[in-house]
Length: 527
Image 1 (cartoon, rainbow, N blue to C red):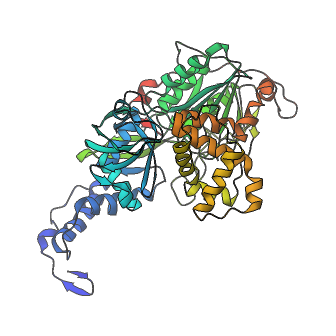
Image 2: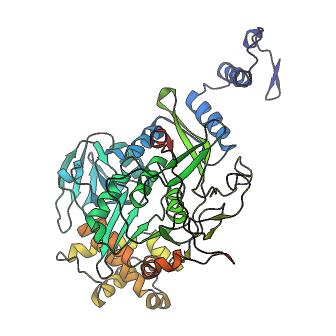
Image 3: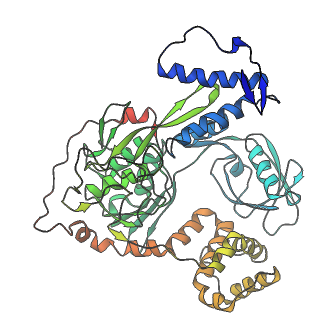
């Protein structure tokens, strides 16, 4: 008998097998779930959607009790994750700016369907398959764009300065998703800058090619920006480390209940870079990005600057399941070359008492003897706070007013050049634009925010005329964290030499010649 909603229900005995099932714990727990699910399927008031009941009602809540990183992926999510790991995605190769009723093209990937159709920065998508985007609410617009990326579509395009629509037909295809999304040289300092957004199968090659293109060994320094890099494929982080460290230098040790303890080291790279390095991190630098940072830090190869990193020192295996679904399951904790863990403790999860390091050691040092802390991410050698944004600037950003103004500006100023700088006339136009759109312009903010306002206007105008790369370069060069990081290069050797604990001296350690584990890492340890 079973009580449901206050009523007595007689349940057929055949729902409860009488034969003794296997006695192992997995089978016993599985039978509990199967019995309850069988009752729901047969007796619940309405038919049950199996995917919703099992995926959303059972599997995801179960994983949530473990840690924040183990996760279940339905068919669409698993497909997208596999695409990201390969560095590819099905689509048209466009980066779009979307707000209610308006979609602007910011960039198209070379060779992509959008690029071949002639779409470029500043183009406005007005129609999708005959449906006017201006008539859709924001959620409907997002759903339409998401549906469209995997099917042939006809777009109505309005080019800047034009009044008639151009219609183009796009057929989706696999498009590369580069992880090195910004790379250029500061000419006065002869220092290269590279931002890596994540680690997929192609990142090592992308980083190598970017450094060589910027000048390679001729550079006087390299600023490696890993801010907002959430990680990715661990093997790729080892590969990138191999570009800057000597072969056979330890990068990490992995240890877990169900996997053997293994140490992984750098491999011989066809190209090796020796220029001074500064690595820039923040609170969104996580996982494989922290792993790379720790290896460069502990081998005294780079100065770490910025803000403390996120603190994710565990590795997930990506496990394919039936029905084209998948499971990311935390299987191991990783430890840096010195043996420390950077995993921050997460109360209420299985990581509430994560190991601080291999063995009982609580004191960790770089190869040259500098003390470093364990747990809670990576603490930079030099703390550099980010730019502070006042509430009015946040409002303008969140409402897309810089981009909207830039779209209007290039309509009336068709001769914008890469040397564009917002002058007094441009700022007057912006002020008039804001007031005509009923946006209050507080005098104290208008006067005090001129530098930031000009930077954002320049970024958005160049983005819509020359693409995101031009805008990214402007943004980076105007970033106070980057500006202060550049000033560290004359002091890199000095910073890497100290300070040391009392009564100690700099003695360079010989790196252990550990076994490389590239094949194992490439087999599926991710994030």
